[in-house]
Length: 156
Image (cartoon, rainbow, N blue to C red; front, side, top):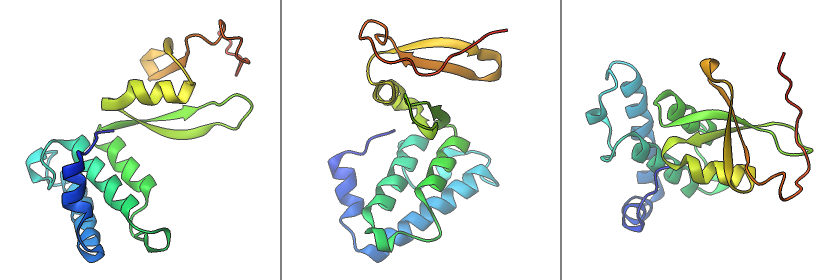
């Protein structure tokens, strides 16, 4: 994900709670406008620095509220959905060893770091159904490190 500098965080998060709610609402409205009548024009966004920065501000603002004061009108999942719709992120399914699959969001500008964290090491790309947008990213050293197998993949 795009990272905010400490100065950017302080400029926004150092404001009173009411201001932060209002700003988060404004950022949400900007996303709705950008996706609709704004014709995907970045100039209509509050955050300068592009779409990834805009989404980063939204995430930081949302996280800044105490659990019992999170806005009911916007969840972190909805912010991530804006990121996907706006081309900042992609949806993925994480298949942890011995656990149920998990839906995750991978940010394009931070994908290497996020993928390495998800697989627990260096990543290796395996094209599966590239024409359908289905790829695998696995731990490159899994066999060398004797990591347990995860799922079987069969091609017919």
